[in-house]
Structures are given as structure tokens and as C-alpha cells.
Amino acid sequence: MFNILTIIGIALVIFVVIALIRTIRVIPQARAGIVERLGRYHTTFHPGLHIVIPFLDRLLPLIDLREQVVSFPAQSVITEDNLVVGIDTVVYFQVTDPKAATYEITNYIRAVDELTSATLRNVVGGLNLEQALTSRDQINTELRGVLDSTTGRWGLRISRVDIKEIQPPHSIQDSMEKQMRAERDRRAAILTAEGKKQSDILTAEGESRAAILRAEGEKQAQILRAEGDAQSTVLRADGEADAVRKVFEAIHQSNPSQQLLTYQYLQTLPKLADGQANKLWFIPTELGDALRGLGNAFGTLPVSDLKDAPVNITKPKHAGDDLNGGSGF
Image (tube, rainbow, N blue to C red; front, side, top):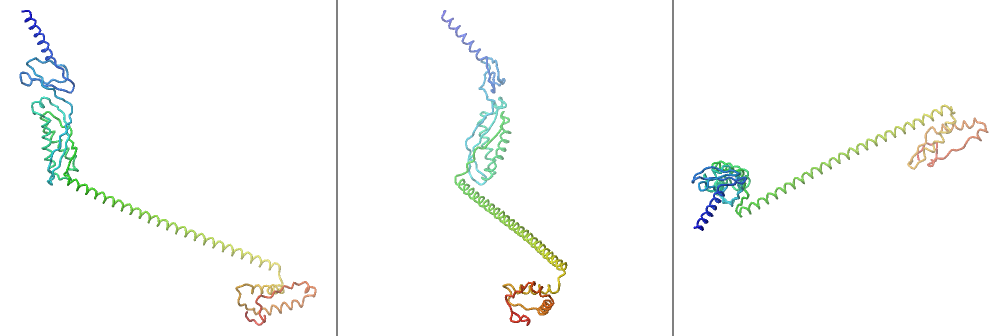
């Protein structure tokens, strides 16, 4: 009897301990718990310490309230130009209503996957392959709008939808690679031609500018040389004029006689005939008058003056046979 009572007491203690353990529940941060009482929804436990009635209340598995990322496998989608492409998607969502996520949908992750596949077929089905490859932002926006409006009643919020990869058929990939290679070659050829054109234009402009500058420099040089020659000629003429004027003034100041002038005239005649370029020389007709005047002058001078007079009559290098005849040499 004692053993039976002991066993019953121990059983009651264990029952009480288990009941106490099931009564006190702690909900961690960013989690939520749905409590059912007698099979019906009773309340939602948020993070913290809570007490439930054992054997009447049942706490369902906790729901994660953090934003979740789910990567769905590639979906086969037919484009408008009847090409089958594989599209991988990534969905970012968060549970905002634990009650709706528990009772409005059986498995919200699978539901999001199926809804994404259906929406993706509808969106991409209206685009050709090139548009599908170049319109990812548009596809992402349309997917997010449809998913967010539909999953709102499930207690979910779709924050973002991204397309990871679009895989066209291998034959199309080869054609696209060839097309892109040809396009790059065409752009390279255009850029090379444009560069050559700009180089030729700049070279021509440089040569033209250099030719203009050379012409301007030559023009200025010629102008300066002409001005220098003109100034030199003017200075030379002024010098010769001054020399002639000084000689003329000296002659008039000394008041020379006719005999001295005649004598100087005879001394100048040989210099006129001197020179390598003189081929023909005419004797002036007034030479005879000058000789007669000089002879008369010597006849009237005293003998002492004749001895002192210098005798320096030089024959011309091309002397004629008769000085008084006026014949040419």
C-alpha cells in the first residue's frame, strides 16, 4: 500500500511540473505564436512571457516575422516569338499578419512560388526575347505589383522581386554572340574611322596654319628687307648729295680759274675710259677746245710757273689713233 501511494504522489508531482512547464511560454524576438483554445483561434502571442491553460490551449509552431529570401528554381517561359527561356527569380517577403499567414493559406512559401511562376509567364509571354533580356526592371516591377496585391490577404508583404538569370536556348545564344561580335566589330570600325578622320582634319588644319604663318613671316621679312633697302638707298643718296654739295661749295669757295678746271677735266678723261666693261669710248668734241685753252694758259704763265706745274696727264688704256678726230674705240 505504501508503495502505491508513493508512486501516485510521484506521478502527481511530475504532472504538476509538466503542467507548469506547459503553462509558461516565452516567445523570442521577431517571432509570433498562434494560440488555439479547444481547436479555435484564441490569440496571438508576441515576443515576451505568456501563460497558457494546459490541455485547453495549444501553441502552434512559431512564425518568423523577419524578412525572408526565397530563391525559386528556373521556370520555363515561352516568349512572344515562341522561344523557351529559363528564368530564375528571387523573392523578398515578410509576414506582417501571423493569423492570416496561418489560416488564409496552407503553405505561403509554395503559394508565392506558384504565383510567381504564373505571373512571370503572363508578363514575359507578351515580350519577345530581346525585350525580355533588356527589360528586367520592367518585369521585376510588374511581378512585385501583382505579388504584393495578391499576397496581402495572406498576411505577407512582398518587398522585392529580382530576376537572377534568363537562359535562352543554346542556338539563340550562339546567334546572339555572333550578332554582338559583329556589332562590336562595326563599332570598332566606326570609331577607328572617326579617329582617322579627326586626325586627318587636325593634320590638315595644322599644315594650313603652318603655311599661313610661314607666308605671314615671309611677307613681314620681305617688307622689312624692302624697308631696309629703301632706307639704305635714301641714306646713300643723302650721303652722295651731301658729298656733291660739299665739293660744289668747296669749289665755289676756292674760286678756281678756267685753266684749273680745264686741267682737271683732262685728268678725268682717262678715268672715263678705265674699266673692264668699256668696249667703245667716244672722245668729246670739246676736247680740242680744252687743249687749246690749256695751251694758251701755259703760254701766258711765266717759265717758273711752268716748271712748278705738275705734269700728270695719263693716257687712257684704250687710246685712239687720233684724239681730235672724234673716232670711236
